[in-house]
Structure formats: C-alpha cells, structure tokens
Picture (cartoon, rainbow, N blue to C red):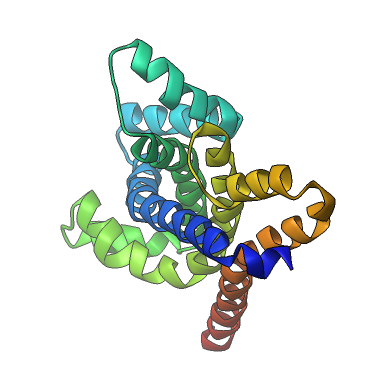
Length: 214
C-alpha cells in the first residue's frame, strides 16, 4: 500500500508541517497580541497603524504574501533561508487573525473594569496586561485555536515555495504513483487530521469549560 510504503516520507513532511505550525504560532501569537493592544490604544497613530496592517493582510491572498517573502525581499537584497521565509510569510499573514480574536475577547470585558483600573492610577499597559487580558483570555482561547486550525491548512502553501511539507510530499508521491492518487491524498489528509482534530477537540473542551465557569 502506497501510504505504508512511503511512511518515512509522510513522517518527514508531517514533522516539517508541524515545525511550520509551531514556529508560526510562537511568533504570530505575541505579534497578534501587540496588534490587538495597538487597536485599542488611546494613541491614534498606533490604532491607525494596526488597523491598516490588519485590513491589508487579512484581505491579501496568502500566496501574495509568500511571493513577497520569497521573490520581492531577495530583489530588495534581503536573502533569507527558505524555511525562515515561509515562517515569516505565515507569521505576517496569521498575526492579524490572532489580533482580531484577542480584540474580540477584550471588547467583551466590561468597560468599567478598565475605567476602574485607570482610576487607581494604572497605566494603559498595566490595565491591559493585569486587568483586561486575564478576563478576556477564557473567551479568546477557542477562536485562537480555530485560527491555529486554519493555519495548519495554510502551511500547504509553503509546498509551492520549496518547503517539503505534507502538500509537497503528496505532490511528489502522486507523480511517482499516478495510479494510486486517491490513496496518496488520503494519506496526506490523514496526517493533517492528526493536527486539526485534536485542536478542534481542544477548542470544544475549552469552550465548554468557559460556559460552565460563566
């Protein structure tokens, strides 16, 4: 069977996909938190900058972001390793989605909480990190995990830019096993599900916990 015969190849691609996912989360989630904080900042220039960045990236096809990182940056003299370029593209694209998920949770916190924090002399940064975010975190976890699930599927774009991840491995195996295309694609889908199904179950579990606590 083509899946078991090429299991080492699938595993190599799966680990590369997992690396893309984890590295992007590590970079995009903090960046998203910063962008969300800028969106609610009392400083107009910060709000405007974050809004423009968010709207541009959320409405730009991910392929164009990859082209920018893999083609435009080298033309400008910025030469990066392929893996780093892929992570950069995914991070730039995913951070605004994390930001919007976080901002939705922040907006769900009663305004009086922030006003009370400011009334006792807390700065904007202290109000956000010590008062608002701790209350918002429970409601933002499920949508953040949904962004991670979407990110898992978005890593397939890297397969068209010299990164040997699951999509790329499937393409190679289809070329080598043209008479078993369906089985090859089933194998690729199965490895994606190894990531997305546990993430979906985690989101459902955390959402139930939030409902119970509320």
